Length: 352
Ligand code: HEC
Ligand code: HEC
Ligand code: HEC
Ligand code: HEC
Image 1 (cartoon, rainbow, N blue to C red):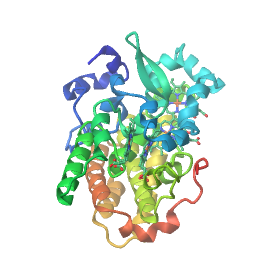
Image 2 (cartoon, protein in one colour):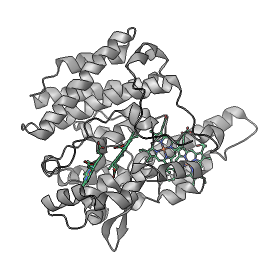
Image 3 (cartoon, helix red, strand yellow):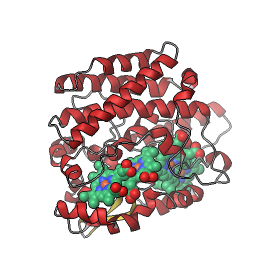
């Protein structure tokens, strides 16, 4: 691992990051002591944050032109030329003693896709495909072959495809069927837990809500129409995304609270996020017929003591375990009762 790969990780996690190794996948179910390591997507430990693993959005555009065009118009992409010019950005950077935002690891890790330049990190684009789907160096070749698989024996073909798909995941690709990792990853950026950053005037990320924030400018469902149409997300899928969003909002807020016990604006916003999510989960449970995972999550969230690190840690582990199971078992069909809870206004305008 190079020093530049480490620049993006916070010092506390150095040892852990080294122990995990840059090339290892962290996608498997882990009953880990540190909740962060249990999540494939969390910023500091994500193998996708190894700068050498990013191949750049242009590579994806070779086959995913429509997705690329849609992404280009989103704030994830336009932030590349806008954010560092914003007077608010200059103020935040000045307060933290940062001279160049686009080479400061503490901004690059969330606002940009990184690249290496003479051994140093710098921004190559805004938040891009690989920020969400995982750094692609080790999976892009395998990914390329998935659609080529064919044979006379349908069972054999399906098995081989699945094997290739599993290999892309083992190399850090976050695919749509892995809702847990894909959604958890949003929170590694959209839930700020650096009190210095917040004290410098940075927003905390409060107000993020997964369904509304994936269905507007971020939506890019082009596969079924081979790029012709950005399909509306199905009702079942919307329900699942909404519930996973609330569950992982709660999980991420509780996890961050356990590391930020001191009262202050960050602590207050984390507490507000945790409380809003647990209230919403209560409503979700009321609106659905008995649901093992949701029931367990609601139970853990109603008994957690927000002032005790031990209690927070235990709740996070329980919620994490149940959330992974929920993501695999639930298609959204079992959540039909919650439709009245779903947002109908989305963040940004979706493209054709
Ligand atoms: C050589 C062509 C090619 C390139 C390059 C390519 N893809 Fe794909 N991708 C495909 C095809 C074909 C599919 C649909 C077929 C499949 O996965 O079985 C697909 C599917 C996907 C899916 C959905 C997978 C699923 O489980 O439904 C994602 C996500 C994805 N690509 C992301 C990317 C990203 C990110 C990049 C760039 C790092 C990229 N792709 C580069 C051809 C490509
Ligand atoms: C690598 C960090 C990162 C990840 C991962 C990430 N985002 Fe973002 N997102 C940002 C940043 C930074 C901005 C602000 C960009 C700007 O305005 O310069 C942003 C902005 C947005 C916006 C526009 C907000 C507005 O004010 O209108 C939406 C919508 C959004 N993100 C949704 C998502 C969703 C949904 C996910 C997960 C599927 C996600 N993001 C994952 C960093 C990230
Ligand atoms: C942990 C991830 C993370 C880090 C680190 C981070 N940002 Fe952000 N930043 C975000 C997200 C996410 C948003 C969008 C917030 C939203 O819309 O809710 C954002 C928004 C902003 C905005 C827009 C604020 C506004 O009120 O419109 C500015 C400016 C900004 N960030 C500057 C910076 C600077 C400068 C740094 C480095 C010192 C930095 N950020 C580090 C995630 C991060
Ligand atoms: C902000 C995070 C984010 C970014 C940036 C992003 N994706 Fe995605 N992508 C997702 C999510 C979340 C889904 C799953 C949506 C769902 O299942 O409803 C997805 C789904 C997909 C799919 C499958 C869609 C379908 O029609 O079934 C493909 C292909 C894909 N992404 C490719 C890309 C490419 C290529 C880029 C860059 C040009 C990109 N993505 C950028 C989060 C992101």
